[in-house]
Length: 193
Image (tube, rainbow, N blue to C red; front, side, top):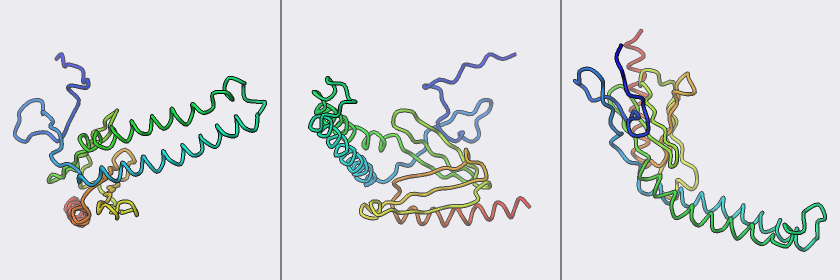
């Protein structure tokens, strides 16, 4: 019986195994970063959502203090102005930290037979999707992504857990990659039959 160390944050799988290694395969991080323009998309998404929620909280604070809603405790009515202020500080901190942090963490790579992604800004997820299991490759670009000339590539397999999304790719790269993956997946499926 061999004694293997548990996987924790420092030893968690981080990429496709290095070829030619004997014994236990050491995994490495994906090599490619998303486009730097993705930071602008993520920043504006946080701002748009934050401003809309801030307006809602401000309206609720005004209504609670001005209309004298009896069902709200007196201390909450008297301090209702705190809710929008606290939320505004939260949104500003999130705008200052999250987009650049996500950019540092989000990586991707396509090897000969695997699509490998790493995502997340607080909790991280590593995903390896075999190219021969690909069913569809979607290349999408919302209006905000068009403004920043980036796109999202979504690779789907029969299993939900096997699907992978790469946000913030350069538009031309996403288009090229989607076409290449579709051809490679079709070739690998044809070879397997």
